[in-house]
Image 1 (tube, rainbow over the protein chains, first blue to last red):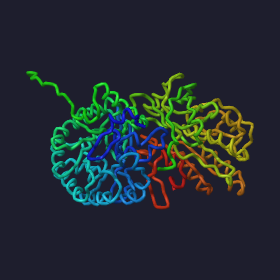
Image 2: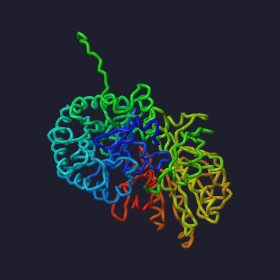
Image 3: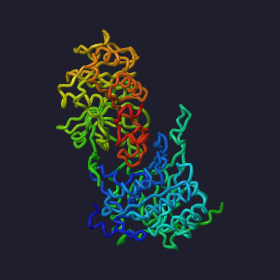
Image 4: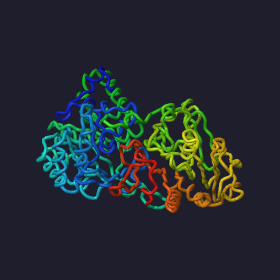
Length: 321
Length: 290
């Protein structure tokens, strides 16, 4: 539980949604919102929002094993959007969630633009609080990052989904592209309300005895502390484009402490995503909340929103080389 | 909200005892009262191995001592993570998450459980034997353990006669002998008193020595390397015996959140990818191996 003392410091508004904390639990890490409640001491009330597992129109079995593998300070995953399909999620899973505990965000995916639209349309007619458009999944053959790497296609997906819902739309951007800021600019024009920055970085691990990739899908998405510097820079780059339009960002990638979260907030994030760190410490969220609150007190700030984009860039001097 | 809430505990568990056995095998006893009070045979713990390693490692539970709040683990070094776990010493603490997973289910109409454990699959079989002697003292179980590295205990000759077991195959695990549960050991390495062959070959000798009524009382429980489980499943199918197997897979969250540890399982609705952590680790052998 967030203490009354910390509550006013941590409570923040994101796309018109009331977040009890800037922490957002990331899609793909926490199933459909109830899985971590198995752990005694874990509470959905400790986070601002939970992004549900990526959902497609039809059920998907996902990729063959192995699906996860530890790498230096990180892990590869290639789950492949295993999900029971949007109708099961809307009709059977959402009714079991307690919407008084936190905000629930659907993560929508598809192989075609039309599929994104249809999944969004069905979530629009549900109690879900917001939708995250996943144009950055690296582990599926069609859609996902294939759309997210192409600014035209990214904008098309956003515009198409925008047509069928008034709910807040968060576009999840891929780091696996040349110019993330240009993509962000196009998505803003297409009507996104917010960004999630970043999804995983594409990577591979090889078993040298068999000479085969360890991951069943051959390649996977890299997450964890290893990607934090990349995620931080991308968050700041997107903030520079999004800030003038008042489009907020969920900064994410390797956050595993309050200090990490604060870095993302300073870089321009209004909320911070926690995923892989939960695997190491399922009870990390209260610690991050307390750490952020302590920092705000120490810096005589009254609310976490004051941190967003407070980055003080160094004066760059010509090095003469 | 769902019924599974608050069933898994995160504990900072002090290592109370540690024994290194030949073959890179390690036995640990830790203080973890919540897990000791709630673990069942087949459930496992998800353990941090090092502060700079982001993924925990699933480790099967060997025994629990509820009154003392203690849990025993036995594991083998398999990769970098378990190698780091093997370096942890008495007095250090481990972050243990557990108990996790669907345990083995015993059935009173099948009072002759056949427990087959291979290598790192031995611990859940010992835990199950402990559960059987406590909850079903009327059962007549047989345990068969196999290993291709020296067994992580001091073998002793068994005083129990077991039908079908070849002469000279007398080595047993002293702990289960104390529990009045017959056990025999198998290995291709020619260890004294052990059956030279596969665990399934030895199991077949026992099954063939039972009459039809006795055979109809057998249920097979197994944990071990995948090829061994496949052979156990085939044996159970041949003798038309129900069989539960405990599986392992690379695992990230361990609580059902990431779907990283799946196995393909045949269900009434067709093949489905199910999570080893919370849908398993114990599955019906037929559902996994056909």
